[in-house]
Length: 317
Image 1 (cartoon, rainbow, N blue to C red):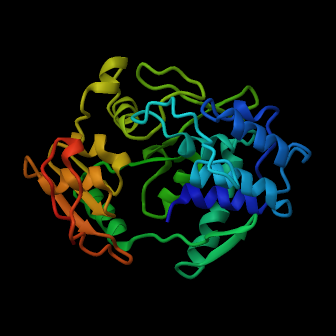
Image 2: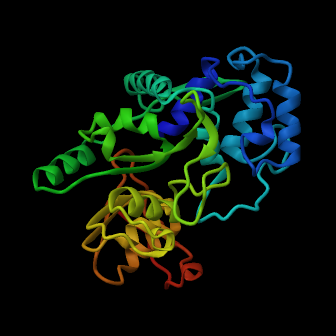
């Protein structure tokens, strides 16, 4: 149910990913083996990669994006040199592969992606390359209602996501949130106003393709910068934001959830770091809700919370 995944799948199915002059420039974290494999499998193709009928190129891209490996092997595709509190290479790459398009063009892609994926049955699949991938997304009515209730009570509601800014803006409108209340993956633009493989900077991280993205500690940084207007780079990174309420469903949300001063809603997808903090509920501000579609069953063995400095907890709904 990830709109970023859905957009990349659509771009590959519709020959919209543009061939870079050098694959290594799409991400600083691609291993030499991954770069060479992309060059071999996609190198003879033209500007807009015809991935709809060249499965070897689509497979090469998606093995890196979804599995973190070179297709047909166990060879790592990512170098492992990144700081996982500031950037997740695959998440970032999903945005970086949109390079060459204007935000307006990407927004139009997003409109088509969302229209198609909402209309398909739950668990629908599509073949891209030689494999099948998810082909449906859903708007969760309880979350849409929560947004409306909060707005009606005078709260300023924002969406924070690592997916591409123009795509998230399109989706946000469907739940009553305007584009100026969206923080997504923000790519730097070139002189022609087209996205590049670099990201805008935040905090102590300048713009570039190794910059901090809206992910884990980056979510805190971007919230402090965009919503609360913090100017000090160190404070953007390290000072908890004065958010009142936060909701998330992943370990990647942990920084901005822990920052929330009044309540923190964890949607239980059995993500260990998130659920260890939520069930420990050290300060009584955590609340837990099951997934809205096909909730996870109770984890009888619990999570190993010791690595987060927390006593073992039982998962449950």
